[in-house]
Length: 448
Image (cartoon, rainbow, N blue to C red; front, side, top):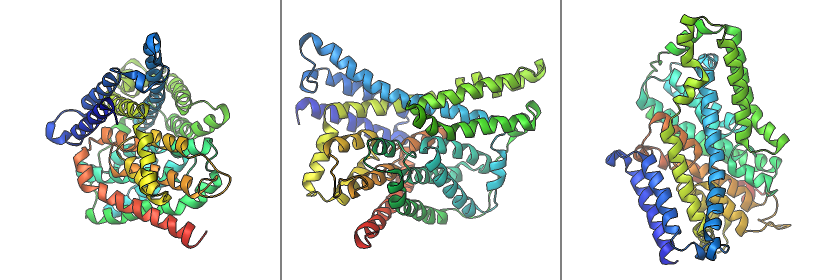
């Protein structure tokens, strides 16, 4: 490792540590993430030639610009997807769209609600994706749980269940989509082999967490839902609900038909929903218009949590620098050597690492390191690729910034890194290990 590489890694580790102690420093994590991003790439510019073959002489600025723009483009697709999904869900929620879901899940038992939340999140994340599912479930939770201390426990389980549910579905997580598109796993294969380990990785944490909840629920007040009833008719609210939720379900279908990135489908749904809601609201009178403005897309866009968006930008771009200098690939190769090709240990460690850095470059690095073979563990639906899909997806639950679901829930519910690490990380780790053991028994012992 060169001095420059060591400095970049040191900046990343220091920034990560500062994010971890946010509750002590009282410095917003977004500010630290942005400094990480700029710091890593600034050090990179001292000698980009050692990392980029094309960065020679006059071509250095152009080569660096192309690399940063490539990573920024990839990051932006995630950010636009996040902003679009948050706006769609907020629009549906503000207009009373989730009221019937809230009524369906309402119960006086805290433990009963925990299981309902876990099961719904798990299966919904397999149909949508873990990011969108987390946003939807947090909106529903806000209608059901008034006590913030209790709600962050439910929200933490949403992160675990969303990541577990996304791991067994070919469209449930970015990493499974990558492996599926590359032909390393098949839809039928990953569902058949990873479904039970994914269920185990969700059920065990839920079972442990139910003992932290006692007593009855005090429901959150829902004044927004009540005011929305006077603005739109019941039929109009249903139209907005089905356009919003149906549109989110349609996004993976749109991607498979057009082969366009998922954020394009999200923006299509947002555009349609925006147009329809404007048509509904334009018929309201002047007095009603003042209240309705709070529920129109233009107002909701101004309320997007930009600190979460900028945090995401900083983290992903800092990790992109680590990917560019080759640290992630070297790490993967080192793991393979140290553990002598034991795929359970290698993928298990990769899963733990995916809770620290973004799982997308980790999986991308593995796809580049290990070529697909005709037979064996590296064949299509082989043990390595299926374990990679499970570990990279579920492993992100161990730290709150280890997955897109965790980051968005962290922003929405103001959960601190330290609280999650103290109370939830070990629970997620137990479920993660149990899922790996379950897969080992399934594939190696029973030979299913």
